[in-house]
Amino acid sequence: MTKLSTVFKKFPRTFWVANTMELFERWAWYGLFAVLALYLTQSTDTGALGFTQSQKGIMMGTVTAILYLLPLFTGALADRFGYKKMLIIAFVVYSLSYLLMGQARSYVAVYLTFLMVAVGAALFKPIVSATVAKTTDETTSSIGFGLFYMIVNIGGFIGPVFSSKLRHIYGWHIVFIMAASAIAINILLTLIFYKEPGRVKNTDPFWSSIWKSLKNIITALSDKKLVIFLIIMIGFWTMFNQLFYTLPNFIAQWVDTSMIYNWIHGFSPDLAMAFGTQKGTIAPEMLVNLDAGFIILFQILISFLVMRLKPVNSIITGIVVVSVGIGFAFGTDNGFYVILGIFIFSLGEMASSPKFTEYIGRIAPKNKEALYMGTSFLPVAVGNLFAGIFSGPVYQSMSDKVSLLEHEVAKRGLHIPAISEKFTQDSYFKRAAELMHTNQHGLTQMLWNTYHPYRIWILFSAIGVITIIALFLYNTFVLGRVKKA
Image (cartoon, rainbow, N blue to C red):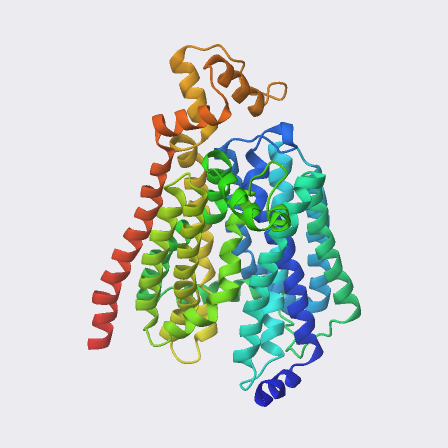
């Protein structure tokens, strides 16, 4: 304990300021991102936008992919013009973009404002990581980055809790105000407390710096072993992101969460009200947010258990567990089984995700670790892009409740106005239930039993299985040959 307190004292003030800014930034980002799939697609009666699943998937996939690619350029901006200046610019763009996004209603306007949110996030990401790196040394970096990772998950957990409770009380607009406010706090932290860490000022022209970054990436990608691994890991990130892209919609459309609310209410009505809604259900984002909660509780334990495993073996094991978890989460309409699926998913995530970064660092030639680490965002970006496709057009054709009901209405020859600004999703469901002589629960069960929307779990888990097989072959043949050589 004494040794730990000694290490803590070595951290300068800027280290703690950077971690605090990361906390509020993750609070804002996940506070929105955890509910974004619902906001984009739910009925306009609720204040949501009523877009199709395809529109949602394309927007979330492409914008988030761009977010993970932009740090290649924004890092050069920070080195050129200074961390503090770029932080202020990042937070101003970030905060204003959240406010504008909350006012936008058309698809194009929402897309463009969300893209500006991504630009703000991309400006911030490389600066905070570099600040942590520059305010730690060989004796403090392990604990320093461990604290940083913990802060990421704490912010990612708190944000959705606040957005969930606030949106059910005050409406969707409060989510954007909350996110903008969290970023505004970071503006004050930067102006008052942030001190530029020691850095070598880059006097090269901006485009020269960009070209150097691109050349570094190209140099790293000349390593076939690295390229094959990155391509394989696209499958992992495609499956992984379904937790945020698709599961909130699946829970909202198909899963009975009232049983969870009633169970909690049975031993603590106050706790049920804290975690539930006024309708006696549990909001989808609260269930999905359990993933971050489990990581906060169990990451150290899981890291200890997989510590002796080789990185590739740990990644394979983790993806096996994630594939099982995703199957449980999407294969049922029982809320308790969904929670079990999310718990299993989180165990696999804890075993695989940290090892992904570790492995890239291990296969890098000496003195080229940073060069190789710069490629780690590439499969994350492409994985987000593919995740949007599976969450959008694929989910809409296989499992979207609105699309399946429209198909059933057409098959029965019922005459119901098309969904529009004047005739919302909720109105369409009510009218369909009336004409089919049932209630909303009965309508949902009929569609569930007729069209089997839960079968999408097979597709998502299959992506994981293909990734596992590819990693096994990679480990056996590609790495095996390298070891023999």
